[in-house]
Length: 171
Image (cartoon, rainbow, N blue to C red; front, side, top):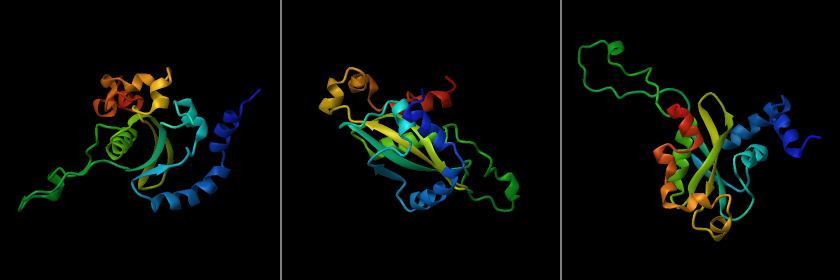
């Protein structure tokens, strides 16, 4: 017997979602880079990676620019631009890791638990990042998540300890 989350997962992968995805992307583009949202867009994915619908949890949608990094051109008079070494530089961090760091910088008092992709177009990728408040009583008293309250897990995203960061580091 299939659960409701199985049906949600299947619906998310269906071709009908691409039609609604276009209208959703229009709304996403008009929002800020890091936007706090009330509830996850992909509830099945959020629940699978640790989200719970209770106080102490928050979800943020983060926009990241796709593509490689470009170096700045400094004063090189009389040289070929193709030899300046400006383009084709790949950033060592994945887009998902960058999104998690952006969310952490925006919500300083919270900790990044995990994230998942929501949408992408030609220019941007959007991720939803699950954040946890380590000082909230619901989090402190919950034995499944209170590991995040220890000082060793403070700003774990900047030390590459989230699952996206570990994948990007090759671990």
